[in-house]
Structures are given as C-alpha cells and as structure tokens.
Length: 242
Image (cartoon, rainbow, N blue to C red; front, side):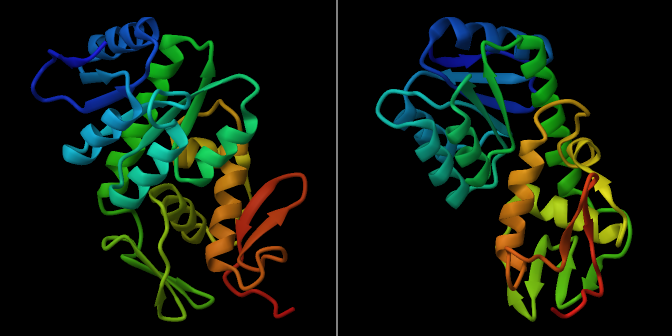
C-alpha cells in the first residue's frame, strides 16, 4: 500500500513504513479516523527517503522491511531530523526493541497489537513532542552540578561543553532537574515524559542509561541521575564526590 490518504488539512502528518499491506491499511484507517494525514509506504529505503525529504510529525516504523531495516532507518533519521518514531516489533524481539530505544525511538508497540492501543500511543507521543516545542514551566535555564539546561533553546551543556541529547533524553533530564531530589517511580516518568500511564517501563530504563552515558563522569556509578532502590530515579543537584 502506498500513497497519501486524504485527511483534514490542519492535521498532524504521520508516515507509516510497513510492508504488510493489511497492517498498513488498518493502522492508516484508525489514524485517519482521528483526523491525521497519513502516508504509507512498504519499502524501507523509500520510507527513509520520504521522511527526510518532507519530515512528518511522526513515523510509525516496522522493524522488518524490504531494502532497509527499521533500525537502520531509525539510526539515519535520528541523525538528520528530530522526528518522533514509534516502532512496530514482533514479540520476542526484545534486543531489537532495546536497540531501537537506544537509537532514539520514542516508543514501540509489539505485534500483534490493538489499533486502538497504537492510536493512543501516537496521540501520547505527538502530545509530548508538541509540548517539548513550547517553553517549559519553570526557569528558562536550569543549572546544577556543572549541568546547564537551556529549556527554550533545547540545549544542554556539561562544564560548558554542548551535550547532544535526543528529544526524550532532554525531556527526561529537564523533568528530573525541575524536581531535584524527588524520587520518581518509572511509571510516573513514563506518564510524565511519554504521556501514558501504562506500558513497558524498560523504555524509561533505557533512556536513563543513555542519559547517564552522556552526562555522568562514570555511568556505572551515577552521581547525578541516581537510582532509588525499590522506587526509581531522582536527580541529585549536589552530588557527593566519590
């Protein structure tokens, strides 16, 4: 299935990259009902070409595709454009799901899935993406422990050096820094950052690990984004020197 399907003009644009025409058709139909503009392509290389030529508001991306796999598409897309990505994976592909999240995918849905669940995930990711483009609540610049987060410029610096973060890593760090020393459960972070209160909290775990790799002196012994045993994570603005 390919081609642009008509929808209201003032709608978020969603690109579906899925080679199973039945799955693509069902997903497209549900998203159209919600008023989105939908384009579906069944080839990986073509999907990447379309996403880069005219970046959509969100990409629904299958992992197993002809000509180019979903993980490679996600990698190349992340390097070029901050487009939110929801991956479609088969159950049992946990390693690929984790890799996709590490590459910057915003969420994943395992097949077989409910089209209503996918639609809810799309809404949540788009809501978070829109919110992140607006000025966040609180100070325009957050600073602690050598970190400076410019919320409006969407920039993070560590000891004056620019740190490249994905959109979700930035949102996660900003949220934690806006609530210093408050311990958040993974479920709370899933709702605050990804916009839904259900789902696999490994999404949070992966993003915390990736964030630590970029801002911690020793990611294996984090002093900024700390683990609170039995609870989740908190940001420590005045870390004890170890």
